[in-house]
Amino acid sequence: MVEKKAGVKLHIGVDIIGMPHAITVTAANRNDRDSTLEMISLFQNSLSRILKVLCDGGYTGESFETSVKDLLGAVVEIAKRSELHKFVVIP
Image (cartoon, rainbow, N blue to C red):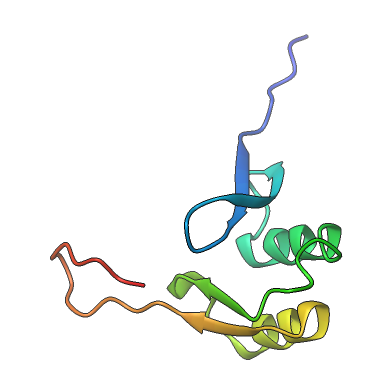
């Protein structure tokens, strides 16, 4: 019998110039918010100087923001698109 292996997701926490500071690999069927919070808790000591966490719209929600605030003391900012179907550089 051959076991099917589930897909994986790579979660990478980078700084404003793209340097990685936290990396985790999770099963693809896991929720992104939960996996990101797990990554933050695993690397909490090395991420202790973080003031702001910039995320895409998939991380919107008070529970995620509260969890990040509790773990890091950081504020969550959601990057929103200005127009649909048009390439624009966002923060």
